[in-house]
Length: 112
Length: 115
Image (cartoon, rainbow over the protein chains, first blue to last red):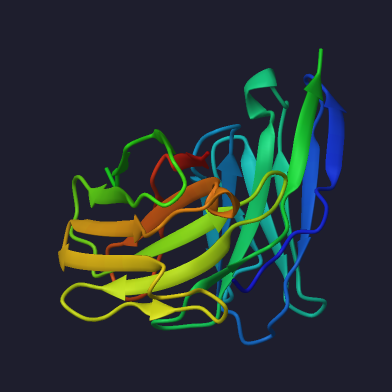
């Protein structure tokens, strides 16, 4: 595989607060990015995507920011809820026909 | 839309037996399907990429004779773990991509435990 996570960073937030999950991607040629949410024992679930010709995209309670200068991607979750507790992965794609490369993931824990 | 199923969801088998896992795209045709392996607290590791009607492309370090992939139709891919051993115990996840470029949609995963 192309991505191996040796550890899983954890972010703990209070219920109702906003969460920001960060991801540094590896390839400056990557032009398409996706954030996935994975709950325990389940497959990853698509949350939101963004192409490199954009720097911000909003969904329902989620916003993805892309900074191509420093190769940084972030996922913002507004008013975090207990159901948001999961591991979040960013994935980058280098272009047409290429495979996605996944980041190591971040575990989000929502505190009551 | 874009639902991917996997069967079985979990399997326990004896060492030396072979296990087949099915991956189906339920409401779209998948030009490409992917098989991943995930160990606890780690990210997804791509094992192989398969296109319908052609041989799978395996990632470096993945034994193609050990992990047989068949992509017989635009909605079905199978992964067979041959002569499974305890070290093959893992969470296997497939994904499917409806177009050559774009999002991948994941199945719910199959947990394999080899005794």
